[in-house]
Image (cartoon, rainbow, N blue to C red; front, side, top):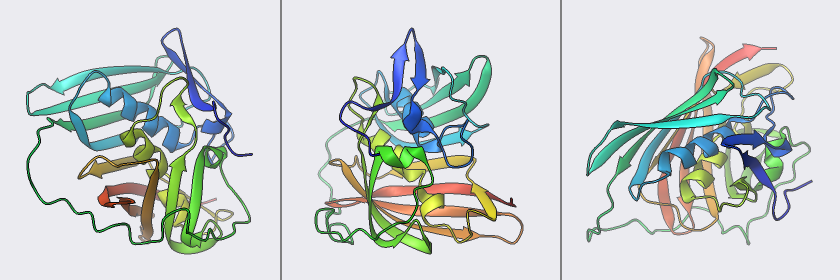
Length: 257
């Protein structure tokens, strides 16, 4: 069942973030998807600043449980033009994820901006390819419209995404949160191995933006590449309807089930 208006990934209560059912991931029914965790940390590194986050790296240290979570932030490198910020996510006293973000001051400069458009039909015109299975509850919080490829076809995909739930109840998702939430789908949708025989879990996610994404819909042009040494990478180029906005990269650890 798709997310409805008013649904949220987390509810804030007494300074803690309570994960809802839409946060559940594909690898364990007791652990969260990396997308909600990344989106929550994205909001933390943005908070209280008018600077632009241009790079966000999330380290998924251990599976985030479906229990109340706390977030703390620290400015590691203060500055007027460039700042480095860290946010830490904990379940009780145990650290489960950490994010580092590079923030740059905003200043209008007359420069050429690539607005060549997205390399696919807009979402309203796209013909979503049918999918036989949705492997994670979090997929119900993100509308996915596949232009090429699908959940059930191995290989690269192009897909439009729209976060249809709030990250935190009562707050509109920011452009960075929308990008971070959807970027963590990359390894799953562009898989080259069967979910029934292998796992290909990403212990990290990096999102780098050349400009703030505009609008709710983002296009991900995504591919996975594997190594025979048991690791790999999923990489996406990210677009909004006006053109390219950045890239995301996930490291992968590959195992037989």
